[in-house]
Length: 282
Image (cartoon, rainbow, N blue to C red):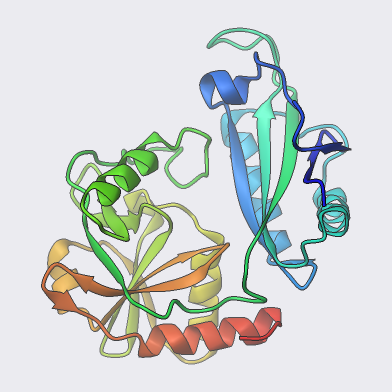
């Protein structure tokens, strides 16, 4: 099928130009985005995604795009799934400031696009082989009002990913400007010690991830203790498990950090709980 995209409510063919060169998302990274997993034609955790992007628009002072709300977003996603023939995929909603101007925009009206890419699995699936990771040493993430939002300025994550590629690593751990371990280059971070989950606090500058929130809630609902706190490299060495979370892939367990090796019993248990919640075949 011909790939399609929705821009400002209109379905268009995605292999043709859909935005102009002076778009502020392209020039300045002036916007926010959400990555939404679709399982068997149904967008997952849509209320949480809508709440987060709404808060992100408030922080960036972008007016909600005309005609876009929680209900219309779901309709657009279902329409795109049907038109692209992709019942299982990764959707991306991007909201940008649709205004002329340089750094100083002339107004704050919002525009948006919705894309859909295929995912080969029917539902969330834990990786078969553990990831190999290390700490990214070259840049640190600033702790500020933008830190927890998925803004379009993703250069830190790109540079961290390039660093991993040069060293044949699967992923890496990021630190904030205080030296705390806060997340990976592709998602939030959890460690498991003696059956207890620990994850960096939002006050340390990690992304307020949708899957992070789901894992915390699933753990608490099933009698697993969770603590949001500051983590340092010593905590990684003392942990029994280490895994990353994001909305598109769910949980990804880490097999090794330097000379440390990890198991993945808790990660598998949480994936099973997640699959039961969203449906699909594991």
